[in-house]
Length: 295
Image (cartoon, rainbow, N blue to C red; front, top):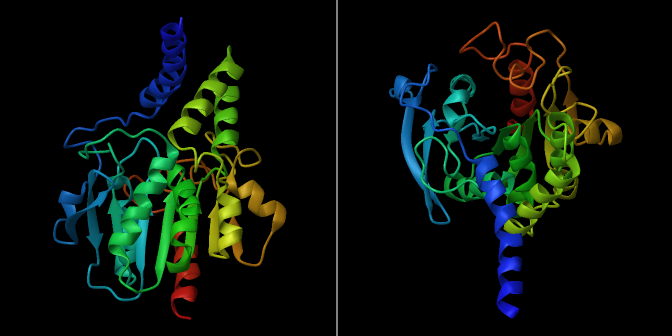
């Protein structure tokens, strides 16, 4: 009888974990994924790598000799770091050392990506490796926005500012919103299983709030969310909703509403400007970090 009970317990633990493995598994792109890659700008970046626990993660530094500050980018779910090359080049030309890296299991990195907190752990490892004493600014989109905020308890004193695009505040809210929006049946059960799996895998991080981490660390932040975000509702699970509600002095909020520039992905890469930066957003971000770097 005891063995039957143990098997049942093991299954109850294993099934939610397998759900996370399936849901969070990164899409494996080919060498040419119809967008610019770091190799296309080999003369502008320095290829390197660093360790995040047992995984070696690939990274690329744009403007390696720049001294104005260090920007570390945390990418969104479903896209590799190559997606943010226009941003890295833009900030490098403005005098910043800009670092792009791929999370565990993404692009050609080995390992299993098991959930949003893994992105925060990978970012914490990147901060430890690349922090060189210049003003450190974290830049994150979507899942990456959650990562740059929830890694602050480990790296808060070293971080000068955070720029968070299209982010969500916490996993429980995001899971609930996702299941209610995308599923027709068994919403509560699926939300419970997802939450259980993430709680099992990341017990110390699952309940972390991006907004609470920002407030407790007192870090300056620019929080941006498109008015037509179709993946994270601006008035729902978004980090933006929390920030707008409290309006602290340390935070700047901005919601672009120009069509094509105000969606979840369009806020970074507008639909009518493939390969280009969002001119409605990035100059304002540069002004924000320039003012901080100059102090």
